[in-house]
Image (cartoon, rainbow over all chains, first blue to last red; front, side, top):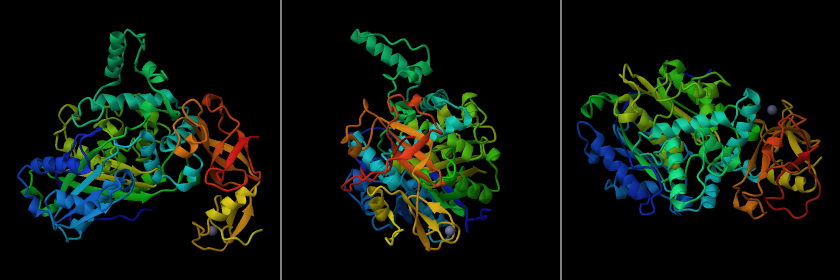
Length: 421
Length: 138
Ligand SMILES: [Zn+2]
C-alpha cells in the first residue's frame, strides 16, 4: 500500500501564463519564456511584483541537444531580470516541468520559500524531423533504441497489444484524435486549432483551386483512414495519432497557502501529488498499462483522500492517441479495457461527464516537451477558475481537476490533483 | 558457462558469438534478459549466466516507417518499413528485438502470439546495430 503523504504547509497556485505553442522560426526559448512570464505576471488578480519571487524551478528536457546550450536556470534568471534569485533546472523527459512544479511545492511546503515561479520550455522546430526523433529517443531505454524502436514505435507496439487484448482497433484511436481537434478549436494558444472536418474542408479547397483530383472523404474516419492524408509513422501509429514538434513555454506562480488570498480571491490549491518510476517496455509486466501512472495516481489519491470518481476533469499525457486511452484507465477513470469505449461513447468530450484534455491535449495544443507538464497544470487552473472561455466545462460546483504527465515511455509519471475551495 | 562480468557489454559480445545469455538470481531464481547484475527482487548480486533457447512468441510489434538514422542508413524508410517487437522467450523473460522475415509493409499479416526463433549466427565485427537481437518466424 502506498504511504499517505502530506505537505508541511499548504501551497496555492495564483498565477499562470503561456506562450502560444507552435513552430516559431523567429523566436527562441528565452523569447518564449519571457512571453509566458509576462502573461503570468499580468494574470495575478491583485498584482504581483517579480522582485518578491524567492526562487525559480524550470523544467526543460533537451535544449542541451537541440540548442547546444546547457545551464538554462541562470540564463533565464538573467533574461527575466531576476538576478540573483536562485534557479534550479529539472529534467524528466516529457515530465520535466511537472517535476519543477513538485520541487517548487516542496520548497514552499518546507517553509523555506514563500513565492516561487515554476516554468517549462522547449525549442524543437529548428531541428530536422530526424534530429528531433534522435533527440527524443534520448529518453528511451538503450535496449529499445538498439531494437530500432522510436517513440511512436513503442506506443505502436503498446497499441497492438491493447487491440489484441481488448478488441479495440485503429478506429477507436481516431475517436481520440477527433476529440482533441474539436477541443483545440477553442484554445487560442494551441498549435493546431482546426477540427478534422475543417482540415478536410481546407484540403478539398486546396485541391479544387489547384485543379487536382478532389478527395471525397465521407467523414473524419475516412479522412484518417486515407494513407495520403494520414500516413503511417510506426504502425498502427499514423501522423494524426502523434503529438507535433513544438516550441513553447509556460510559467506559473506558487505561494504559501496563508498568503494566497493576497494575490487572488480564487487561489487553486495543491490537493494531491504523486510521482513514480516505471520499467522499459520489455520488462513491463503488462503492455497495456503503465505501472508508473498507476503508482503516481495511487499516491496522489491517498494524499488527497479522493478517488478517481471525484476528479471532475483531467489533462492526461496523450503524446500518442493510445497513450490517452491507457492513461484514463491507469488513473482509474475507466476500468482496464474500457477506455476506448468511453471515448467512443463521448464520455471524455468537453460536454461529457469526464472531460479529458479540454486544452486539445498534447496532440493539438502542441508538445514542447519541457513546457508540457506546466501547461497541463495551467489548463486545470483555468478550468477550475472558470476562465477557459469557449472550452470551459460546465462551471457548476467545479472542485477537483488533475493533470498526469509522463516522461519517456512511462519511465517517469506524475499525477497532480488541484482543488478550488 | 562464462566468467565474464554480467553486463550489457558481455551480453552483446556473447550475442555476436551466437549465444543468447541471460542472468539468473541465485536467491529467487528469476531470469533476466538482457542480463542484470543486481537482482531487482532481492537487491543482491549473486547472479549466474544462463543460456536461452532463443525461441519465443510475439507479444507486441510495430512496423516503423520513420526510423532513427542508423536504420535509415540500412535502407529502411517509408517505402521499406521494418518491424520491432516485444518477444516473450519460452523461459519467461521478455525482450525487445527486430523481427525479420515478416511483411512489414502489410502489418495486418503479422499475428500476435506467433512463434519466433532468434537468429543466432556468428555476425562478425560488433557494432550497435548488428548487436541487436533479431527474430524470425519459426
Ligand atoms: Zn532475486
